[in-house]
Image 1 (tube, each protein chain N blue to C red):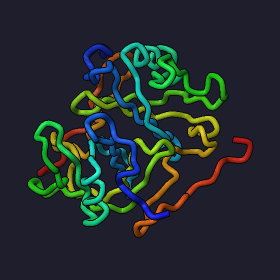
Image 2 (image 1 turned 90 degrees about the vertical axis):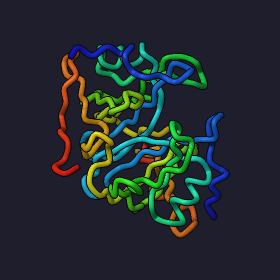
Image 3 (image 1 turned 120 degrees about the vertical axis):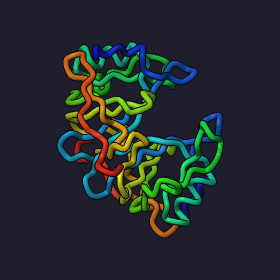
Image 4 (image 1 turned 45 degrees about the horizontal axis):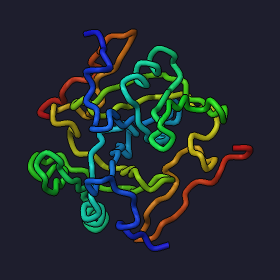
Length: 121
Length: 121
C-alpha cells in the first residue's frame, strides 16, 4: 500500500510523536514531533526533520549543530499515531551534548545521571 | 536528588508520553501515556502502568491479557517531558498480537508489514 503522510493520526496541533532510535547501538536517542510535511520531508530527503514546537518551524536535525540524523528505517505504529525512526546519529542527539536525551535514571527513588556529555559534543 | 513525579512536564491533559523498550532485545515496543499517579504506581509496583486515554482509566499493562511489562529501568529525558521504560515484556506488547506496535515500515514509498502476530499471542 502506498504510504500517505496525511493518513497518520495527528494531535489537535497537527503533530505526531517520533521516537529516534540509534540503528547501530539501538539506544533510544530522543523523542520529538513531526507534522505531515516534516514526515514527507524526512522520507524524501533521508534527513530526519521535526517540527519545533518552541520555535514553530521545521527543524532539520543537525542543520546548525552538524549532529545530523540520517534515516535508516521509518516505522509507523499500529494506531498510526506514533512514529519510530531508526537513524545513523552523528555526534550527540541531545542538546546537552550527551548521546541520548534519556540520561537520567530513577534508581531507588533517586535521580541518577547515567551519561555524560560527549567529548567535543 | 529524590525523584518526584510531579516535577515532570505533563501536557494540558496531565499526561506524559512513555516509550517502552524491551530490555533484552532492545526493540522499541510501544508508546503510551502516563499521568503523575501512573508514574508513581509504575515505580512503586514495578508493573508498568499507563493512563488509557480512550477508557480514561489506569491501564496496568497486561492485567487482563497477561502480557505484562515488568519494569527494569525508568528514565527521564532532558526536558522532563518524555519517559523511557526498559521492560521485561511477557508475550506481545501490541494489541494485534505482535511483539511490537511498530510493525509497519515505509520502504520506497510503500507500507510493508515486517512482523506477524506471535503464536498464541
